[in-house]
Amino acid sequence: MLVFTGDQGREIIETIYPPIQARPSPGSAEILQLPCCQTLSHHGKPRVLQAIDIPSLLEVAGRADCVVEVTAQVGDSVLDSTPILRVFGPTAQWRRQR
Image 1 (cartoon, rainbow, N blue to C red):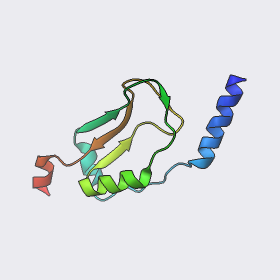
Image 2 (cartoon, rainbow, N blue to C red):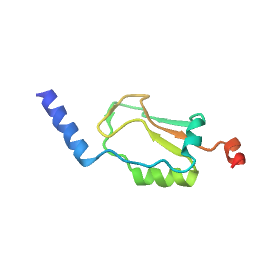
Image 3 (cartoon, one colour):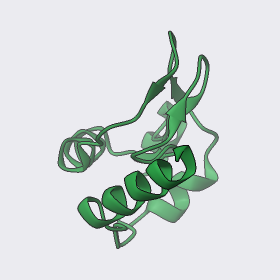
Image 4 (cartoon, rainbow, N blue to C red):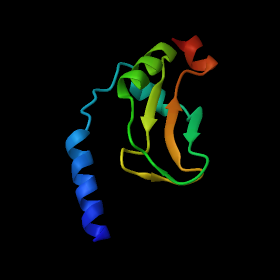
């Protein structure tokens, strides 16, 4: 019964949150060559990721001139110290080169 419930839940999540067909922004390949400057990890009791506010992440990343890599997806269980997203962005050196 638990396997059936899990399968049904994943199917519903895939229906509500279809894969994102994002196009790389200009310069994102250069940014991804930089080391990761920040990682956001879950801290606390185990939880299930219920939603990702993609428009807000895109807005913040655009203002900060960085790329955000989401490493967890909706429906994933996150335990203590599970990485949720990584930020690749302009360091002081990268900004001077632009």
